[in-house]
Image (tube, rainbow, N blue to C red; front, top):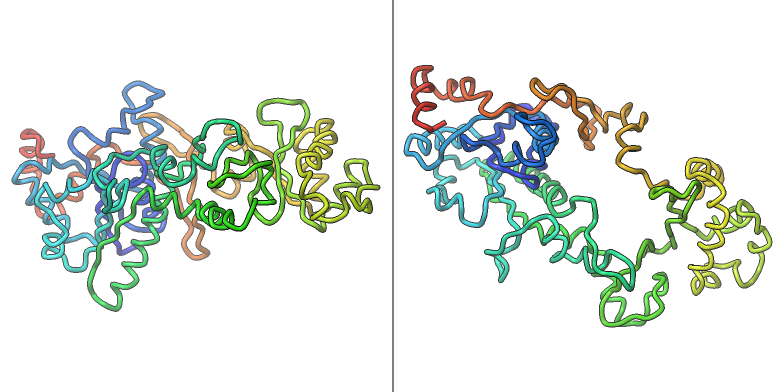
Length: 404
């Protein structure tokens, strides 16, 4: 994507996560900010007077310019920026860009090849004007209703499926539009709603909602079923039963998630010291175990409680049994394997010093990604506006007048 310029009008998380991915894929991402900057530069600061981790971890591999879109000269400059862009991405409230005077029709007039991507909370239906945040998208997309334990309240997931999950969906749409432009010569509108993206990520629960019409969901640990897919704790909800079982020494993340495949029961029975269960008709087959999954995982846990999760990981993997330790954020930050893979990356920042971030999860054989420090506010005003023919004298004047 070396020759693709992205005009990034996004803020907070859903949009910046999308444009950062585009930057990692090689696009020239120009982050267009109000003179006051993206609000996340100041949110959740851990160090006074420097850009927050909230901002830095979502805006690597970008350039920054500032512009006051309410001024006439600002609108002229924006028109020139659109003319030279391949992609425009925004996640303002519904209609905000239209009210600036730049409807989709107007943008097409300026640049017929432009791909214009919008991220909103909701689609064009009854929720269209509602505000959306991460957990609201989780609430209204099916995630919260199906997360948690049976008798407990609905819970949010720590994964940012509403914001960053929607950003990834937007990237897919943008890349498809750019690819189609190669044959049509025309750009197009890409629209992604947070509610829609979360629902897409929860599609297996919509699958199970339809299965309920034909009886209980037997692979769920729940004893009773109503008209809705229930919360089912840590059950896998898939074809193979799974659960998080406790390990020594009993800390908050001393757990390992174990999946019991049909072929895995015999080695598991041997490992936990109950080899006779491999041949016992009450336990030997998946159907026999299905109505006592809680007891099955209790038996496994009686063994795992005597071992730490790393020992359990090694022992189970030696028998090809699917499992994974619950890794805390501290463990992930310190994981040498993730460092070696370039997924946990240390980045030097000119003001805050070194910080950790997540590297590109998209790895292409011929296009390695170097994670570069995010831009300071307006750091590239001179370079980018200068390329549009704006003189140094006018730039100084525009800054004095609050246009940039």
